[in-house]
Image (tube, rainbow, N blue to C red):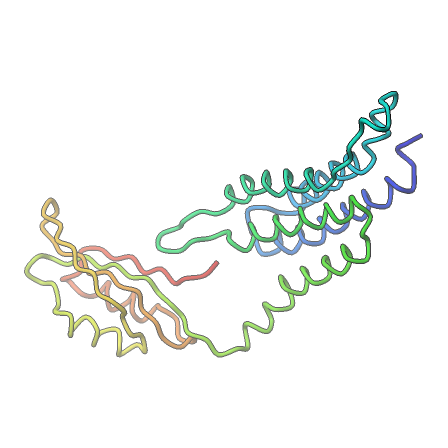
Length: 230
């Protein structure tokens, strides 16, 4: 049976394994797309490329001079279509945008499926190993590298109780954070003022001391503090 042909079986099994490994890393991190999603993406790409590569076999009876095999067109269609799926895992939560790495992992998984489908197994295996290294290995390296943290903040004050720009910056400077451009919004319906900015500083201390002070400040009507991460 065609199903058990070596030319079909090896790419299919390799695609399932590669998609499963990458998907497991994403699922372990609690991301939106996990094992099943990545397996299906990789497997779909592989099956479509196998169909394109062996196009002659499903066009039996057609004169050979009429058949034009162009698997590249199938690859273009796959990578275009995967963009819609990738867009579905990217979403905004507060000030942060999440899902970019998962979208990229789906994109590379589709690309790996294409490579397995055209039987470039060496390149596909190397790409799978490199992808896992980037997703899992570099996370350990990033944890040890010095870097700045960024925190998006929006604080609402009573109209007569809003601090000056200097006071706002001094408050966060006490916690090792430097505000970038300060945005001030007047809220006429609520009778208040909102001060918003992106804070930057060295990674390390948590935001809990800031939260505690804001909660204890009677001038603060509401606030949102959002550390940036994927």
